[in-house]
Amino acid sequence: MKPIYKRVLIKISGEGLMGDEGFGISAEAVKKVAEQIKEVVDAGIEVCLVVGGGNIFRGVQGASKGLSRTVGDHVGMMATVMNALYLQNVMEGLGLSVRVMSGLEIPQVCENYIYRRALRHLQKGRVVIFAGGTGSPYFTTDTGAVLRASEMGCEVLLKSTQVDGVYDDDPRKNPKAKKYKQVSYDEVIEKQLRVMDLPAIAMARDNKLPILVFSQHEKGALMKVLAGKGNFTIIKES
Ligand code: UDP
Image 1 (cartoon, rainbow, N blue to C red):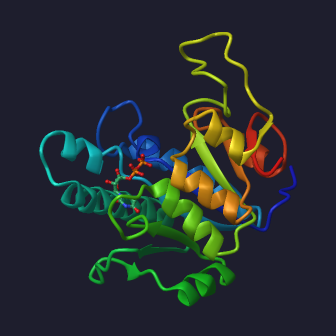
Image 2 (image 1 turned 90 degrees about the vertical axis):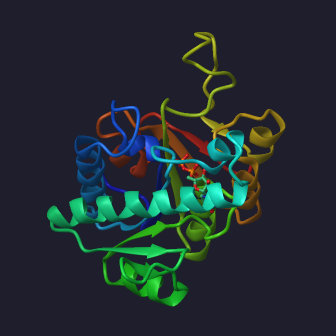
């Protein structure tokens, strides 16, 4: 299968690194993700990754238990750095060249995010994992993913989810839910289709960044989607 993109950003949620364990990092799940990314790199595509932190902590969780939202979000952003460092090391074990760049400055463990340096890494064939989200509280890593994909000039953002695309209702609860082959940013916003948070979708719309939504559970789905095949929904301008 021949990929149709040259530079992409893949958003991996914290859940994607958690496996069946319900919390934290599953060595097995990380290995699977790393192997899939390797296939993409081996196919000659320049790869940016954004990792979430929901497998460890989300700011809103803390806020619901009385923690300051800002502090909770700081903890959440640190969780994304933990995931990124783990994934980096596993990917390196597969022979990939990988840099973690964080929106929060933690120079002892990874590079700070610097626009020109990130571009240089990509041009040299290194995978860049963008950690720390946007570096600011009150955002999510989905918004961080749209931001970095826009900055890096990625052609598409690939978002893996529990199901194989965007539906008009939750297909796990409603068997009659209809899947979209293509849907506009405005429709996602108006119908509150909940595939990504609103700031992320609005920013993708403003920057004309297509989002490909596919299943994290389907074997080989990522490479198929990159070849324009398989099961996915594309979010773009109508
Ligand atoms: N976060 C933040 N700013 C950002 C990105 C993330 O404050 O720009 C915090 C926020 O608390 C969020 C947590 O980091 O809940 C983990 O990110 P996210 O919930 O997006 O992870 P995912 O759902 O993708 O696993």
